[in-house]
Image (cartoon, rainbow, N blue to C red; front, top):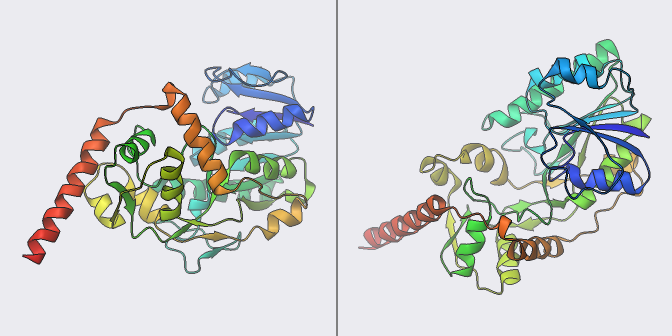
Length: 338
């Protein structure tokens, strides 16, 4: 199989890249070359910016592919560009959408590909929906061979998944756990969430590549395991060898007192209980099974963060914000109780 990945070195795509190369497929990566270190040998690099449409057209002028997958398309304008570039260049175009595009809040916690797409809380999700609408139109009217993939919360050893963090990433949360400080958990922490390790996601994704039954289809790829946010944070604390000091705060309050987009990432996503029905994926990829348990993957991610200084990004603004919320809630309790 001859494939082109636009991107190919991110949290989701790196493991797919590795799996394809170990299986002996011919893989091209179109990116700016900033994150290609550490990839296994064999990938053919097309150095360029996908936003420079004329330059990319030159790079692929003599190339055709079995699969083109864009891991960094987020707006309709970007998939329209991809259509112009690849409509006569590939047998399958895979768009990476998002499970956050599903109805929010959900009418049913059980999510399948038949769940309506509607998210009034998050522009990111609405843009993904608009991308899907455009691509399905091209499939129906022009025969453009699309497959839409919807990941949920996919992580790797380089990204500890936590619910509430600042722009600096999860390290500030791990540091608060280490120091015994209150750690904010949105809501009461009992909503169910699905974490999918990128190694497992890769297996499902590669199974859809070159799969004629996936053309014109939307497919979600997630683990079958559900954890509460309390459990997720307890596992992280255990991996750090510390006792968790949880501070449960309503998601709407967190959105109201922060400049971060918690309206989207919490109210439009993580605050909702979702359990995914992967029967469609398993019908299309019969041997798919997610084999990395949540506790295993979380411990691996924590160990990576502890061992790699580049993962330890300080975020003093987020830390101070957490402290202010903890103090404000303590004062509110004292005032109400008199």
